[in-house]
Image (cartoon, rainbow, N blue to C red; front, side, top):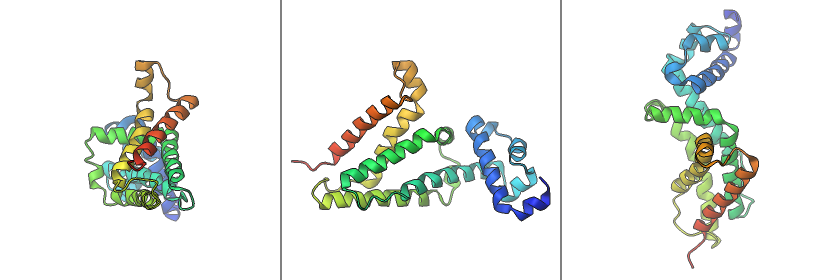
Length: 211
């Protein structure tokens, strides 16, 4: 790709670099990914990569930010306001769990960053902005349910969100070792549906008001 074309399409160049970097970091992690390989796959040169992202570490942070933003945007796009509170919780949970199943590269990146103890995400100035709208969406739903007498009062929306995500995350991120250890393959659709139904019942049972 010649440099004139790059200059005419800066957003396209940046997007291609992010896409190539996502694949490299997913497969090889931060340490194993190579800047020259990312640039080649993106159809550009290393100079442009450094121009947009300053360093390999800066590009890695940008990839993580983009993945979290994509996750958040999907959930923000849900219209839960017209649903009964329990159905809204079901819709949100199913959407989040489906996203985890459909985006295994997202899990690979998160697992890799956990090996780094979150030190690169700590550099992000935008990360927490991505989670706030989703937690606010959940907060509104929990408040509607409590006001209608269908949910208990005082449920912490962030704790509930982390619990909800964790249920789906574990089943997807550990699917291979669970299969080897237990002989049950949770990548099968019937298994996914069965455990999702169990998780939803657990969540909604917790939310019901005490008698």
